[in-house]
Length: 214
Ligand code: FE
Image (cartoon, rainbow, N blue to C red):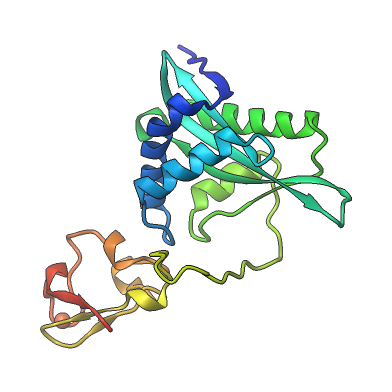
């Protein structure tokens, strides 16, 4: 059976459910930790201010099972409006059922119709599924590299350096930038994302024996 979701623009009453979906997304991505208050605040700002962007949701029988957003800006190069595609997420139970395709097609068609010249998006460098998906949708990888400067000291966006952990048994340091490739942990894997089955590669102590390295 083909599921036909209704793709529509998010409204205020969708904020709580979209916040839940973002929690799923940020738990998957290496660089982000979910914060429901921050997410619902930002979603409300976008919904209230149509010049900032649009949030599209996939509604199945009254429940939102996927979302994507376009945030608007301008390109001096193109001399046109352009959009950042952000927060593309489908609820885990609804993956591989065409929802992602419908959401992205809807966003692309919207941008085209409204005269936007380009859509840019970021994805985790090791997320092959996402990369293949965007490629199949006509996105191509840019040669540019992302640089960031966090302006709020209190922000808990993690980066690979500040998340090193030390084994309290033997002193082995887990560096997320390096991962533990001998034990199938790819470089760039945050300590929190490692399976609980994993153990210190030196002394075999469990994950609980690791403390944050300060
Ligand atoms: Fe150890």
